Image (cartoon, rainbow, N blue to C red; front, side, top):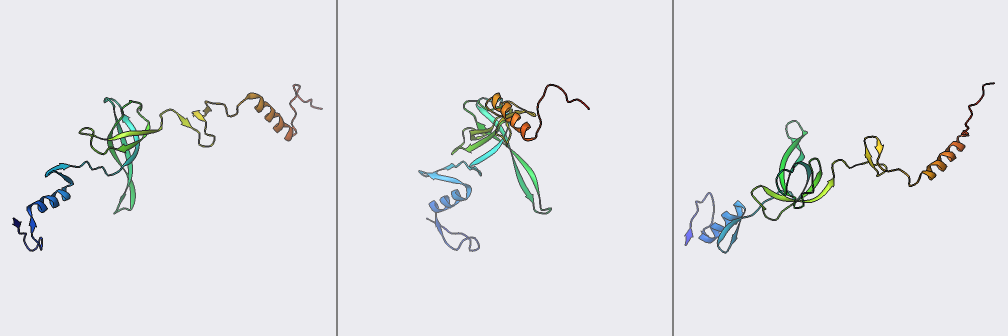
Length: 173
């Protein structure tokens, strides 16, 4: 059976199964055994964001911030979007920076991603120069392995500067 289309729309005639297939493709549907099913569509496969909620069971609420260009002002603005991610071990806490991976199909109504990795755990700040953990301005780990090495190195530095460490103050003559 042929279905004619108006001349302005299409210059050809399609069979009924061709019409269904072309309509399904436009709507993002997949035709399996003559039945149309909806495919899960996720724009980004990998997303990095900050955890803002963990009150749901095995689910983390993650806020992702992107920079979007305003075409009129030619200025970038922050655009925030919230995602729900499956966290099977409930290992992330509020404030963690996490990496999310898109699931091939939706896990539930709102969950489209799963937690792939915790990039930065909240409260574990690392100094970029030394690679050591810090809390404020104090290092949590010693910078050198032993205190004897630091005493020797301090004495060497003092000798280079021609400063002697004496217990008696110099007398004024």
